[in-house]
Amino acid sequence: MTFREKVAALLEQGLIEKPDVFLIDLNISDAFKITVTLDGDHGVTLQDCIDISRAIEHNLDREEQDFSLEVASAGVSLPLKMVRQYKKNLGRTLKVKTASESIEGELVEVNEEFITLAWEAREPKKVGKGKETVQKTQRVPYSEIKEAMVTITFN
Image (cartoon, rainbow, N blue to C red):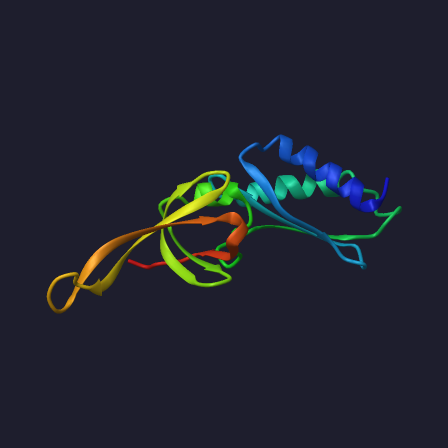
């Protein structure tokens, strides 16, 4: 079993004990720096990071292979990657980039194939002069999403 396989197996075992926490990324550099990025259905606590770190670190032998380990939550500065992340952000504002456009709107629907965004737009009136506010919605298949970020608003 390679070092990476061993780390992945220990990580998987640690996550079994925390069903609401899930893996976003596992990276092991050539210098054996292990970086684990987690997210959770209800967020990730410091204790979640400590528990996953211990599950990995306490079961690896530094005499066999020296390594460094960093376990962190995904945070708001990272783009959404998994359907599970979209589901936990239902009702929040997202900025979604596709190959042809950039859309900012409230995430109103999430399923296994696409997301649906809703927003208000100002458009010319159909009759008369001026503009009116209209409600718009758009389905965006995951296959078309280049990047999706949660927009942070301060009220």
